[in-house]
Length: 358
Ligand SMILES: *Cc1c(COP(=O)(O)O)cnc(C)c1O
Image (cartoon, rainbow, N blue to C red; front, top):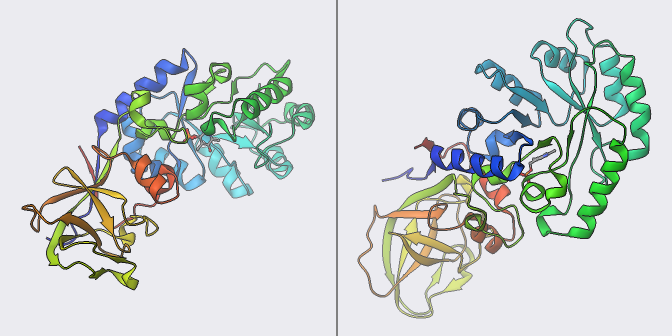
């Protein structure tokens, strides 16, 4: 069978992971990050499965619009905010919460429609130096917002952690301290924690937590595994063998002949490649499950195929099931082999791979 690549997406795992997040949040409200098409799992499916969350966070306007069009009435926080008067209007008419991180956005709020005030989240740059106002700029921002009729009262405050995934306590503690200083005397709700913060730093739970990757059943920690946190993988990327070849010791396999068989063996060809989002940089030796058995990837990953060494003995044949990651094979392990992070692998599964919700 061709076109065998499938991403099986487990709704039960999603709900279980949300329950793990909820427990760790200890009463803080949970904003589920479902940006980038629900980390590659499907935006609407993610919103449906995670509809028990108190809010959704997305990066861009089109994602927020898609959620409203699908009927979700949740709070939706636009993490990058708006960049034009048209977007401001779209945000107001759809009742989106807006992050502001730049003075330009203050101007857009100033000219907003006073009949539809929006909730504003001030992004504080507590040390990551990506988006946000510096802690010392926050009082001025608040003062400007106070006069604006398109802004609902009591802006919320959020910041983002740069090193929580590495369990880098010194950097994270300094970020939390910088945020707390900026937040002093401010009455609105506060939010610091991504998944790693939520699971590792009880100091940063605040009023809202913002888990992303853990909801998809992936450990947020460098070198970590989902099971250590009680998380279950949501996506299992599967395909099938489409050929099994008997080759001789010394035979090269794949483009460039970068890998040669050390012994006579059987090489299986799997119907999945970088055109499906499997990382081309995964080196020989990266684990793959064939009929549930771990075998090594060999040679370069092609656009539509990759090869595995099945060993000299065995009964595998075309049509046998293959798992690239997920149930039985941690996406974290494949990501480490490929020199990247699980976030990227999940987001990069291409649109030609059907998502099957089970
Ligand atoms: C993506 C994102 C999150 C979620 O991060 P994870 O590491 O996936 O838990 C939280 N906050 C902001 C601002 C984000 O952009």
